[in-house]
Amino acid sequence: MTEFKLMKGNEAMAEAAILAGCDAYFGYPITPQSEVLEYLAREMPKHNRIVMQAESEVASINMVYGAAGAGFRTMTSSSSPGISLMQEGISYIAGAELPCLIVNVNRAGPGLGTIQPGQGDYFQSTKGGGHGDYRMIVLAPASVQEMADFVYLGFDLAEKYRNPVLMLSDGAIGQMMEKVKFKPYTRPEVDKSGWATTGKPKTRKRNYITSLHILPEKMEEHNRHLEEKFKMIRENEVRFEEYNTEGAEYLFVAYGLSARICQKAMDMARQKGIKVGLLRPVTLYPYPYQRLNELAAQVKLMLSVELNSGQMVEDVRLAVNGKVPVEFYGRMGGMMPTPEEIVHHLETLIQYHHVN
Amino acid sequence: MNSLNDCRQLEELIVAGFGGQGVLSLGMTLAYAGMVENKEISWMPSYGPEMRGGTANCIVILSENKISSPILSQFDSAIVLNQPSMDKFAPRIKEGGLLLYESGNIFKPSTRTDINIIGIPATTEALLMKNAKTMNMIMLGAYLQLKPVVQNDSILEALAKVLPEKYHHLLPVNRQALELGEALARDWKPELV
Image 1 (tube, each protein chain N blue to C red):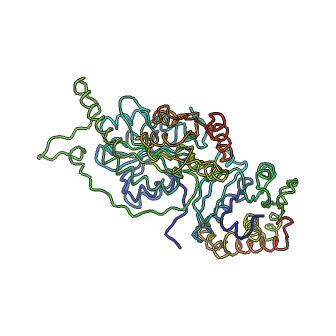
Image 2: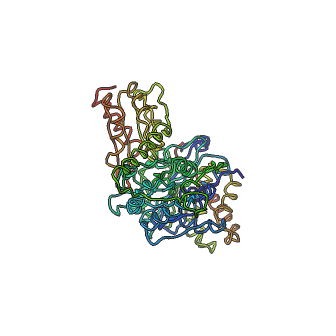
Image 3: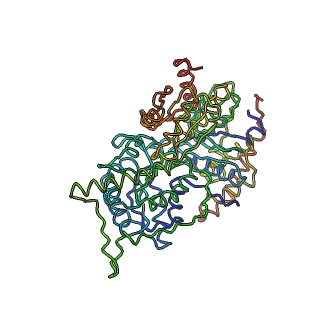
């Protein structure tokens, strides 16, 4: 037998959390990610780790806040409506500069929406979500393998920057099974003694975790400090993948599940002689603005394909800054665009913009 | 039908039926067998409200190359176990493809003439084996006879993985069901090549 395992995205993510040394998981069941809590409730106690089904998502994120403050490696996961409930807590965690991993297995909304996959939470994930000036590093997996890999990466980045990291997946990637290999993981040494509330020895000052800075001067200073950090993140953590962009005349831009569907559409279009490539942002924050801007000097048209009514397309337009037409195609409500449909849309747009 | 060589390179299959007919486990067994053979695989279930008593389906892709989209609208083959699935998926089979259906549950098979259509009375055969739950394995056996996308040994290895250990005493009967399915499809000659 190979060292590969056949697992659902949700299960692979849960297993990776154990391998990453996650000390405590707090969550509340919601489709399409209930497997995470089920898996961890079964497996975590075997490793003497904490799993708790909280009374609500509001409680789980605040338990994460507490555990992270005490210096533990901690995470929660949920799906769209549950993540909405967590926004206040996420804002506090970002304000208090605590590391944690939050996983959103995105379903279609707004409201309770449906349990089918969606990408309608792009704005919430990348532009704030909670109140105040903060950002999260947002990782967008497109395979079961990445659901596992990004748990390691997510925890590491969270601790490196003392900031919450969001993994933005979706119902399909969470529910589908693929081969997954759990790569050997070395946990970076992180010194938390300067801030974690682990009990005060006489030799040092009290560690104090708060997001409250009542004096405007102090608050602005804290805001500036956070912005410095986000600037570093923007400079160092942009991740993306390119497919067939060399010599491409047109470009699909898509993340997660949409990027997988676009790969198929790209292959079909190329068979028809349409030279289209694909850029897949792996981090949605920070966003690959610069690379898209460079590609705008090469391609004649970009098409953002999303499972929503047009959210990431705004970032593509920001990146391209009017150099070439940037169009959007999307399906919603858990409906999926077929590769044929995407190719057809691209062909229509090429005609419309006279860029053939 | 895509040739033996082709289907070993890439097979895009949908399995569909009522919840409880073993649709998902049929697909999972096949996916697991693909993994045993170091193929690239994806198994994409429907997990919506249809799981709760209505229809269920899963898309299984077995490929020698990296798989792009796990969600498809056109298929090389379909294994359908009830009438709604026949009505929904028969039009989505690629020209020259395979439509394998359970003939005890489906009274109105597709009238398409550009695909290969074969009915297997798997429910009756399973009842004759005194184990109604082996119906899906009879269908899988028939499918593999027509489209040998994986080796028999790999399927047997997969079964042992997919079936929880407390049901391992049922491995022989599942094996028997697979062989029966193969036998039922053996004499069938495709009209299209």
